[in-house]
Structure formats: C-alpha cells, structure tokens
Image 1 (cartoon, rainbow, N blue to C red):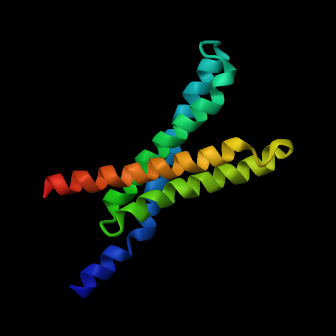
Image 2: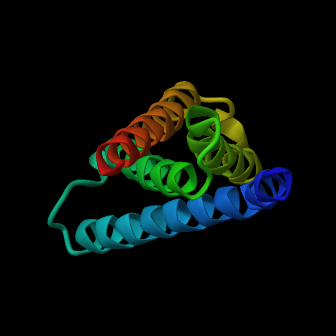
Image 3: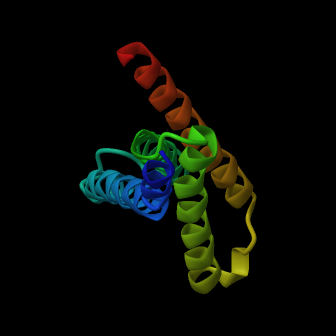
Length: 133
C-alpha cells in the first residue's frame, strides 16, 4: 500500500505539467483562431479582451480537469494550479511587453477567470470519477 501511494504522489508534477500543457495549447489554438478572425475583419478588435477571458477560462477548465483526473488526491488544488501557472506566465508576459498599462484591471479579472476555470475543471473531474465508480 505504501509503495502504491508513493508511486501515485510521484505523478503530481506530471499531472500538473500535463494539465498546463493541454490548457496552454487550447489557449494558443483559441487565440490563433481569434487572431485570424480579427485580421479577416469578421470580429472587431475591441472584443479581444473578452476573447482573452473566454480562452483563459476554457484553457484553465480543460487543464484543470486533465490534471485532476491524472492525480486522484486533492483534486481541487491540483485542478487550480495549472490555471494559476498559466496566469503567472501571462502576467509576466504582460509585464515585459506592455509596461505603460501595467498592472491593468484586466489582470485581476484574468486571475479570477483562470482560478474559476481550474476550479470548475476540478469539480467536473471529481464528479465524472464518482459516476464511474
């Protein structure tokens, strides 16, 4: 039993990394599609902050669900961490690229969106696991 628990806990960094990578990839794809639509003139550029929030939510939701399903203990905490890591990277990128508007009110909104997406992903992962057993 002890070896099994240690083997499961050893996968925590991999679960977090897997959730982060999948969530970040989804955000990248959603941004690519949104950028294409903006450049084609199909959607106005003023919607980009809202699209950013939507992409952040869905990326954190997906990443959180995958991380929580990969690691069966402390699902809520495990699900929120990939979203917080994604926010930290976005925050650092904003600090480096847009210093005249840093920090901005959207940063706080993005933090809440990443956190909520990860939390909801953890809830979804926990509920889907309960139904299977």
